[in-house]
Length: 361
Ligand code: PMV
Image (cartoon, rainbow, N blue to C red):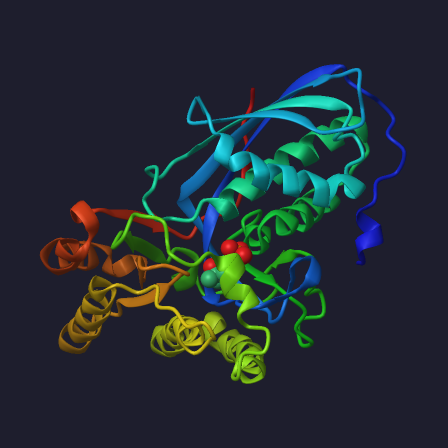
């Protein structure tokens, strides 16, 4: 599919007003997306677990307005106006208007809330942009009642990508691949797809406990981080490595080889941060407690053979990953040894989920 496939046909109906609501989950990448081309096109393919507990719920009410020369919306985050989110939404609307030409016809009230605590250091852009894209698609569906489900979800992912790249992996579950990768014929730079190959049951219920090392704003945004991959001395090798890791994961995901899974996932996390440290200007998003936790995970795994592992996002928090069968042991380990490295002892248990859900209004 190309961008043109997401331009709508003529709308059949124009409701005067309405209300739609969707809940979209966060996701955690196993093979990381870091570096992009114009138009939110990823420099390399990535794959992620869709999460379950960490999610954003968004309700959009819309009413017809007289003037159609500009966007009109108000934004409530956790029941309160949130002016600092507005520029991001404005940019999002500008980027997607060509694909949703009804956007200037309505005034929108957007009410959004996260299941995870405010300023927990968990990025809400993936779940937030995915939930908003789904709400807009729900409105488009009212204008185009014959729309097929497949198109609905693919276009929602396509739109979410234009809000925040990794958001395109927050529509469906449980494993989502995004970015063109030759061996996966249905893969695309434009949207995420449900991973089309066999996935062993161990990975369908994998657990992710997010250890909240640092809840504040990170000092370098991912937008800036992606830009620093332009002219980066190791960029080309890194992009090739992501393709290779995706290939290596295929048999591992199919046969449930947790040991080999860990090698790729931990290497991906450290490579992501190595890219940050080797860019110009260079920066470090890990904190001393991030490293303490990583070392403790390695020591515990070595001593007990319990297959706990870690991955990192573009921040200091650690995602501890483990099979569901080891949940009790993992939780005990967290309480005994890791919680002390978290800000105010905070962590959030999550696990692989099945994608976004429509909320009945
Ligand atoms: O979606 P963005 O532009 O915030 O980039 C996210 C990049 C990482 O979270 C670091 C990796 C990934 O693939 O999710």
